[in-house]
Image (cartoon, rainbow, N blue to C red; front, side, top):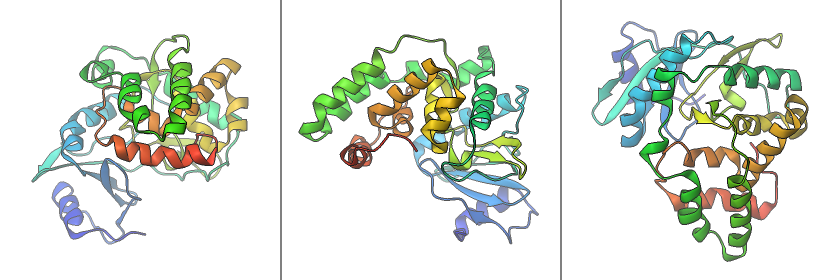
Length: 279
């Protein structure tokens, strides 16, 4: 377990006065937040950059609305208001029990259960309002075409354009709730295989539900193929083939491309290794 920095413990104490932090530990490093886990009690999320601090109130509102959406699993519910500490923003959210499945574990029925539950949430007015940021920035395809492909090694640029064209030319489907990071440690199960909770909705957005299907390739593409329809599977492979769907979602929903060079450095090794673009 990773030892918590003193400032993280101070923030947790301020948000949750009187809470014992003896067993608290830091979750593996994320791109958006530092997270202090207090087992059985809460998770304290602290922004790492100004953009994350500014967007935290919206992300917390997404959690509030999902918690009342009748989902058949738990989501982390805000326990405190979003509070600023200097240039950082922080919030404590409820603990969600269970454990994640290891890579390539699970079965098609479990995958189908998660995907069905997430996409069943109605994208009604207030939820859609806090989820949909597409008008706030350039389209994902413009980001890829203008900022990413020109930075690829020359021998990958034509192939990059081909893969982008294939994704852009997918026939439109109705938007559904897409989690955007639906794999690994973000899906918690009981010891007997019951779905208990889904964490980390920071990337949630209205989009093609096949994107979440591609993210579930953490459990193996063959399991995904048996969990979804042939059309959803085809779409999932097309999204993933671009540069890896977990990278692609970072360009969607109006999100700015803050480090195109960093994005390229993350995807090129996978292109060169010629491996399937999945978690």
